[in-house]
Image 1 (cartoon, rainbow, N blue to C red):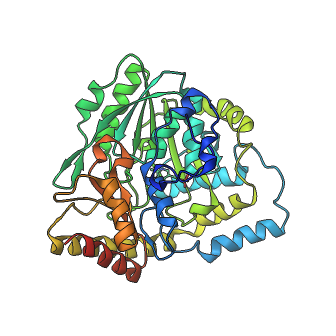
Image 2: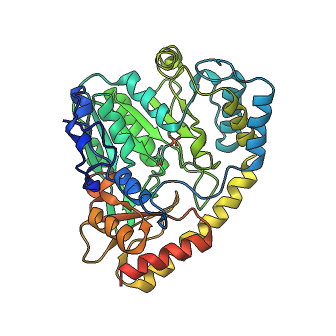
Length: 404
Ligand SMILES: Cc1ncc(COP(=O)(O)O)c(C=O)c1O
């Protein structure tokens, strides 16, 4: 049974009296898989001196021009209920952004503003999953996406990317062969958190063709679509899809615009999904916050220099991390194509959860255990390098104290 009164999870070793009190929740909640990454983050919070590179965010604050736009919206009274699928201006701005950056025509009727990429994922899954439907997930993948499927009462089958000397590859034939008559959707994060793997356009075309024939949905999380080290943006399923395809793409303001705490994202769906998504959003969050959408408009409109500046820093950090790793000799991994994570293995170290805990205890450094990202992630560690160089330097020094 789920322990409701202690939020510290199994790492805490906490047996105080209130752990005696239990409530029984719905089976799908009782059976939700744990998130060892979140457990480790909480474990790290217990100590003041911990450097955390275990979460998926940079350390740069949201830039001023975005904050000013929110302040202006607040001051001008944008504090009331807003349209459930977002302000028309915000939907239009996302559409303009796709035209400008992706060269794609995406009409506003297909764009739904959401209170986070996570919410966009939940809306998409709620729209299509019936209890027991199978979802094929390409792993390693951000654990919350798998848990979102569990919450929607779907069943997950993991199809693992292959680690070829630190370069992650998809076996498309294996992915296709894993689909069964019960498969409702294929879930992909491209670029991927934690590996930085990017699905190639021909792979997207081939998978979409297969999915079309079988009536299978594709849900593509493209939250890291702008965090690429070569070119302006990663391929999108929107590049190869028809407007009526069974495709949802999930996106977010969190990463590229340094807005993790704002909780704002968007979903692009098929042309005729608008009504259904509106109903789900209406009965769920009733739409994203109002005034923050004006900040998001400004982010899209004026954010390119900021994105470039961040990417320049992260590109340098990426090289620096892997140079230091190469000097260490016990760390196995390769620089990612995209996103801002180093996902690596340590020679003779299999227990990534135990290792992540030891790093906090002995070196005051919090990194994410690979087992948080699906079965294939066991034994790996994820480090977010989207931070200032001094902080990264200090963190690497602490890591090297433990991996000698
Ligand atoms: C692949 C992926 N999708 C979605 C999110 C969350 O986005 P948001 O902050 O908009 O909920 C993350 C956060 O780490 C992520 O890695």
